[in-house]
Amino acid sequence: MKWPTQRCAWCNRPGNALRECTVRVWKPIAAKEETQTLRVHPEHEAAVRGYFARQRRSGGPVLYTVLGVTLLLAVLGNALGVLIERLPATVGAAVTVSIGSLIVALGGLFFVHPLPTDVTLKALGIRRSVRILRVVSVIAAALGGWIVSLGMDPIL
Ligand SMILES: [Zn+2]
Image 1 (tube, rainbow, N blue to C red):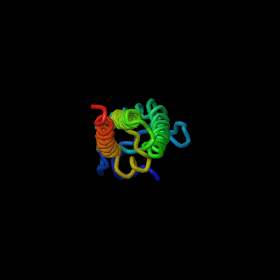
Image 2: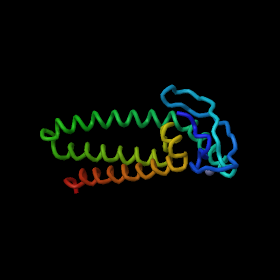
Image 3: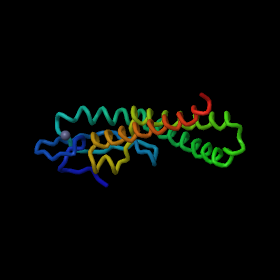
């Protein structure tokens, strides 16, 4: 998928005065940088350059943290599902609180460093992609908070 040529890469709106802008982009699957040329409104060029500069710095660490934590959550979640009946209530509660806390942490990480996919960026524009991911990360953090409260219940 290519960047649209008629719409601004930042706000996804058409414009006559779109300017070409060449940026270095970090590619998650290949885990390497690549040069991409996109079109932006002149007033949005600084925002686009800032976005890709942050994406290059934080993309790798954020992605690997998210993958690692997700794997840990899957393992913890399965272990909890199998063992919950046999575990002492306090251990079960501690695991529940840990899982909830990890989800809150993931939500927070994604809020600060959203990592939209290339396809999303090109289809929706960078600004909207980042906003959508921030809304999703707030929902995830709220869900994590609710799980933490479930675990806290038997302790309190
Ligand atoms: Zn724009």
